[in-house]
Image (cartoon, rainbow, N blue to C red; front, side, top):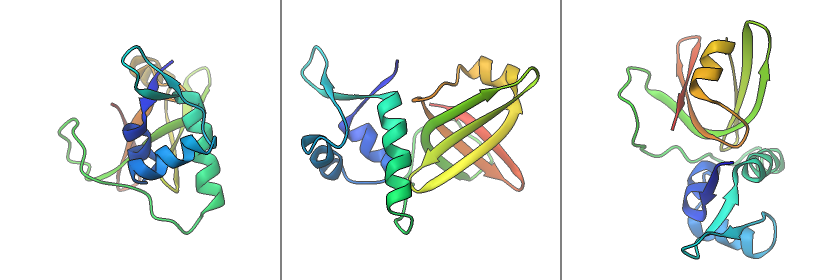
Length: 137
């Protein structure tokens, strides 16, 4: 299971690290410590929390800052966390919560398996025209 630091979680949620830290201190999201003493949030917990935050504050702005990643011509990037993966025999549906934005992409099962996408992973949805591309971070 992938885990995230407070800073990474803040970026995915579109808030400051101080806000994410306050939420963790208040018990709104569970954390655990790694060997170095850093607080980490399990990916599945962060995925569920991102949905809760988006539903409770529909008018808020999501964080969409600059990101390191692959070079691409698709400019509309939505970094977020995978909240659902539904696999069919041939096709698949992947949902990403990017701040207050929920993005759904239909792609091949093979593509989902090659990317190793699962709930709780950090991923980027890239939108170009009517296509949404998913990049694993």
